[in-house]
Image (cartoon, rainbow, N blue to C red; front, top):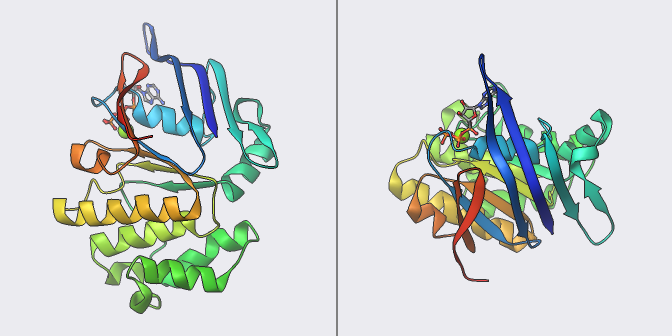
Length: 227
Ligand SMILES: Nc1ncnc2c1ncn2[C@@H]1O[C@H](COP(=O)(O)OP(=O)(O)OP(=O)(O)O)[C@@H](O)[C@H]1O
Ligand SMILES: [Mg+2]
């Protein structure tokens, strides 16, 4: 389970301190998916950065519980944060951020090698699930935007992370491709028992997740849930 309690985050502007997240709390059960919508500037990416340990909150707790351990993300040292990002975390951005000079399969091998969890049969199956098996020896720039984002999803899942953070992962795709790729992301995470936090501007995409939230006035408000 991912448990966020009373999370506060502010940024220092030239003249004032702006509080972006105001005692934000939420619990997400392991293997479930939530979507987060909200106006531009409401703090969605800020929240994902805190969950990715790329930044520290002013106060509050972020705990990630698994069968074997409880990780206290806010209290991580640099080396613990590195280890967490390598092993437990998968991240997908709007821009695919694939490495263009190596093949699709080599892109997928990187996170698995970094986290020392290389499972070639699993990677092949992942590519098949995402409909990308026949493209594995191509370079990313030989693929369409939708295809590249499928690879970015496979890469985020390559080391079987406990948590996946996706920031507008299909924002660059047309609405048909966006629906297909988002559905693949939600289904694959569910199948792997990976928790998914999906930030999106699209209600259609949000509808694919089990619980839907909106980030408003620094807090998460639940819109609906099927759990
Ligand atoms: N490093 C930073 N320093 C100062 N202010 C920042 C920083 N990062 C973000 N902000 C501010 O915090 C607020 C929230 O930004 P954030 O990127 O989290 O919004 P968002 O909800 O992801 O928006 P969008 O939908 O446009 O991506 C914005 O007003 C932004 O200008
Ligand atoms: Mg953002």
